[in-house]
Image (cartoon, rainbow, N blue to C red; front, top):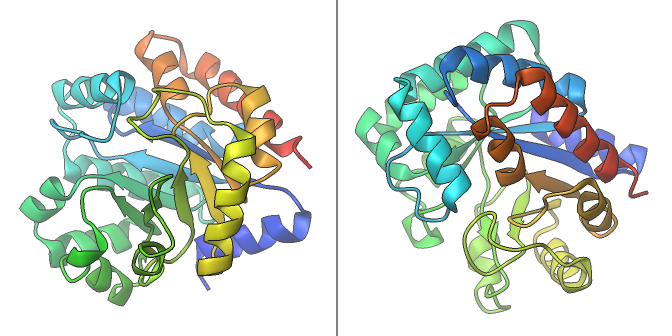
Length: 264
């Protein structure tokens, strides 16, 4: 068992979906980012996705691209992200942390060193969007050996022929990208999402969390009715980018969490 599997098991017993919040480490600066991260569990967040800032985030829309650049301009580094996770873990031993980003910074750090450092910092899982299943030996398999979940993305174009390969070495949960395109580009549609979630859940046996198109409490509630978890990123990052205080950002997160948790 792990923090991630424990959390999903507990939520299943409660009969409600997980609420997963994405924030970019170091955005708009390391201290403000940490203040927001530290407040997420109190705002109803069940799993934290912590973004690794990168110069070329190809799967992300303008909001997260700008967040990455703000973080980099503020001096955030991969070592700083891991230090942020470790600092959070000093006071919070139970909330799962999933690092989400791209392979280049990890490769530059060195895969064995990164995995050891991430595990020591209290990280629970990884989402690395530019490593397909054909490259599992690069990071996915070593991560599993190190005790870290490797969470794969499935999309509306992941058909029945491709799904077994996507699921093969995935653990923790499957992240279903509800739209074709980049983050923040459109709204998720529960009617379209429901059969895909059921298909992926049946094929993998893992919880399925839905993101890339949830921006409001109402939409979180709708998606929460058909998924095991609801992921919000761009809408939160936009609040941070607009210069709202940590308190205001966390109040918005709470509204989203309340929406998701009101689904059942």
